[in-house]
View (tube, rainbow, N blue to C red):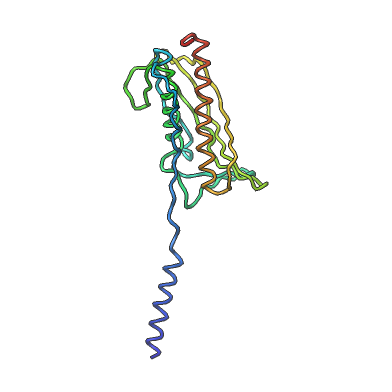
Length: 206
């Protein structure tokens, strides 16, 4: 009888230990593409071809980790939430979709394309954090610099730094992702406004 009790207790201990080590599933998120404009122009505004060189980022921001940043400048990653691709890759897809919708260029080429282009757009991502503040608020924070270059001469034609902040509805990963989606769409719109102004200044479009 004693032996049976000991065996039962052993099985119970193993069962409880197994339950204690069960971890929650990891939730993956993506940056959704903006909705296409209903009055999308079918005629490109210029005859130029633009190639996106791909956003460069620090190794930490090139991973799929979803990072938060505190007011004490402490950086951490959410344990059970992550991106389904590196933020830099998703941001490039959002910008490419927005550029295609605006029809600024006769053609767009991603970084993997071998197509010859007239212009090259390079970018460097400095910050992409869900900032958690001591006042119980949070926001999505993006700091990125774009450089427009002549593809043939590699001469810099224009450059612009963008800092985008969008308040988050909650201080968890889901709230951060929703704010990042809005921030990325806003970034793309501001970048295109800058590109449009640059093209007008160079008389590539009217």
